[in-house]
Image (cartoon, rainbow, N blue to C red):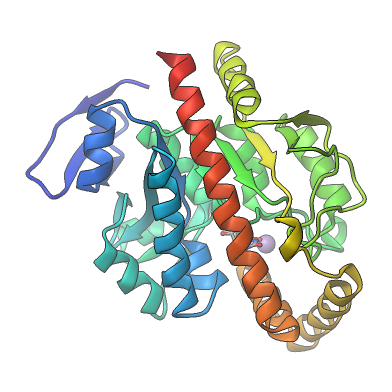
Length: 324
Ligand code: PSU
Ligand code: MN
């Protein structure tokens, strides 16, 4: 996408697209764009709604460091006082990690958050939108949203899936948590035209805390170079849809399936009893499962996102090579 771009004074630079969408880049991301360095996008809902303080902050900083060590530049994305911001400073990350009342910002939330000058933490859907505006093709997270259990009745289907169908970002994740209906999530991704590949040795589509979900991924890539080639081909075809690279949790952090299933069943019952609805459902279930499984699930969560960051950075580096 071509932009009418204009750099303001450091430490931030501002780019305004021809569609009037205004982005602010951190100095580091701005420089990376000028130098055509590989950049990896990161979401912020995981910081505000996915993990407790201070682990959320520690993890966000460590994930960024992993990406730098691999030769790419991290760009954590959020809306700060109404300003869509690509690349957060340490102070901004600290602020978000501690802040209360940050809006979980998926596609439908972004415009009101911006208009009312609020703080918003972008979900996978929100981050994909920002990544495309910023011209960043690779995005790393822990897990994406999906079709909820009973979603075929409640219509609770994450906007992450439709966004993946709309934009060509490659998302590296560890599949979807089994709080969701994984089979229907994969069906919906197929309908949306999203290319789903398992990563590594196996064809199994992972279930976040566990290596297997009981479902196979339709495609498989064995390394970052192969993943980058799939992204490159998708660009050549001018497909406007996305790619999911599903990386299993490192084996030493994989959790016991029965333990997770029991925690999920009880979390779902609680959600039902308390009448949790809409956008509150996912954060509620994540927190309840995390509470029931103690530090083990948090440790798995941190390990898998760092591992995904390593792989995502490799993919971004390889993709940049193919493009040049
Ligand atoms: N799944 C996780 N961890 C998360 C989320 C999902 O394992 O933090 C967050 C992501 O930001 C994702 C969002 O985009 O929840 C999906 O929310 P919803 O189901 O309301 O679309
Ligand atoms: Mn929902």
